[in-house]
Image 1 (tube, one colour):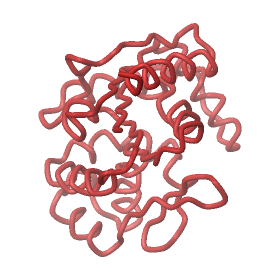
Image 2 (cartoon, helix red, strand yellow):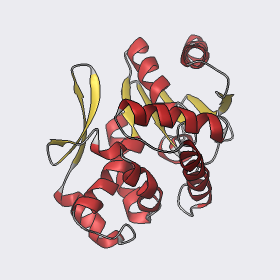
Image 3 (cartoon, helix red, strand yellow):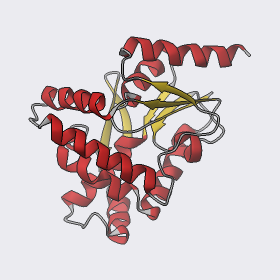
Length: 221
């Protein structure tokens, strides 16, 4: 079974996807982390975030892998764990530009489909239900207010020892929402057959339960 979870930044996609994957023993694939890794590769190689050709070459020279380490998914670039390095404000601010590059998107979508294979998989991102896994049996589209998402990101940064202003985070989220939903290639968009969940006032447990119910309902048919 393939499960696609899409939605804007900090809507809770990765958090609940990991929990559901663990509960159902599904393979979990964080596509957003892969685009962040592409952005980090550009940064560390001094490449302009809009230079598609050089970024693609650098990606080929620095393979991106998702590995399970002690039960947690880690992101590796050229065999180096970059799981924390891809979550900094600079990477967050520039990942939309890199992920909008057609060549980068094509390369990552191909890799994501290969990873999904024929196993039970839960994949989260912004174009999973529309582009990467259009035939997924269950499609979920998570939404939440920009303010609540900014509060979540503020807490996430604080846990990593990163200090940011709430108003700035909220502004950055709104800017990214616009970029993600207006890019020409695979924009952030709810699939016609996706189930929308507004997580603004929901706990992680409530969101997880709602998604689990949809998956189990589909499995029972």
